[in-house]
Length: 287
Image (cartoon, rainbow, N blue to C red; front, side, top):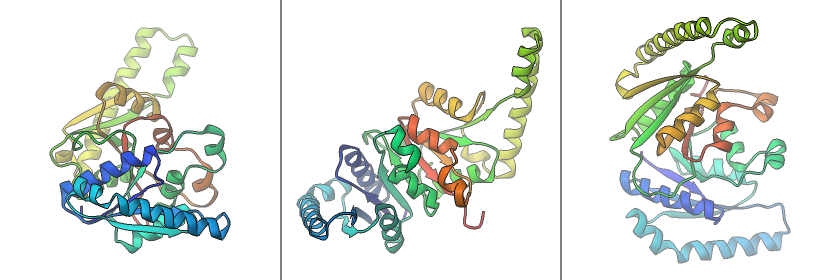
């Protein structure tokens, strides 16, 4: 990893992100930036007052932050729309990774406007590490979400480029749903026949995953292949509960216009429901 930025709102959730960003900066000996954005949707005098106070608070912690990371971060206090300023600041600092704290869940609010994290992710410009857990050590147990798409392969490769796969146990999980199973059960087909059908579908899914990993040249990046029946979100929940990974790596698919603003996705589910740290990787430019 060559550089990273952590966006903070000075909340307890952002404090976890600060610790993780410092740990990563120390691990990879890379420059790092701490960013706070003052929302300009308030009187100008309050904007300036908040900006001054925040800068003083961050500067007062500079020694502490330097001790955590082994290097001094660049401090930035920006004014403007938070998600826009976060992205532009990350671009100006050539950040390879953006680190953010998980935002408090608020179902009604999130349905209509989404969190800052989700809005940044929908812009699809750079990988975002969403921190849910205290930084107790390096990422040593990884769950890699695979859906037989180039987007998921790209997510694994980006995690590798960032150095996050090094020295970790890497489990690839592929969820599949045999659609005919429910119809067979509804039609009164015997459980034995249903189980036989699911077994055949499972073997086919295993072969599909093996072919995918070979074609995408990911064989040496996956230590364990997990194939499970169920909807992707439900399978990820089960795997997180079972393996308790330090980090979940997943990709998003490119969307535009109204779909990007409104449509749900597995990444949306993961951000709202899973309690592990999550690296969300956008599709490659032009994908």
